[in-house]
Image (cartoon, rainbow, N blue to C red; front, top):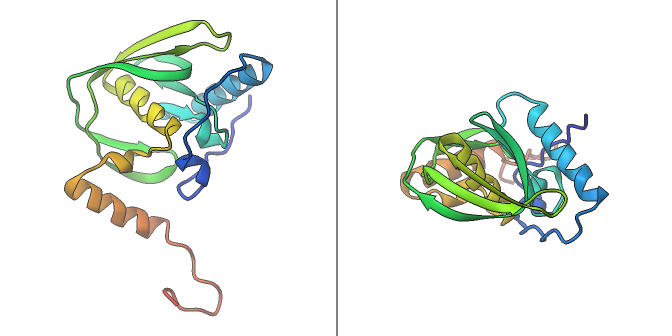
Length: 173
């Protein structure tokens, strides 16, 4: 079992659109195993995208509503309804903000052998599919927030991810 470390806000891989997978080979199968191990290796995780473990490939794992799996080169093909609720991210640890998402989504992609896969989910699974697909486009959930939620999130992120002052200096100097 290989649980890979999660990259956090500030790492450029999280803001870079991932590359389309073109080789359905042993390297891809190893990446899928690592994504699933990283997802299931810690409780409470609903998804892990390849960029979150430092790999710029369009692949993610998901685990919600008793569904566990992964998608290669996913795209959301249908959305309906709306759900509200707090959303968090392993790459922005300790923070969660109200994030509107579609209540039901369908995502299409491929398995590790290049065979087509379709996943339809509601509630938490729908949220996870949307969240992880965003990661593959270099988008974090805080980027989707608007109004007061966005202002609160940006303040919290600035506070939580403020670089430490160098020894012998004052903050802000």
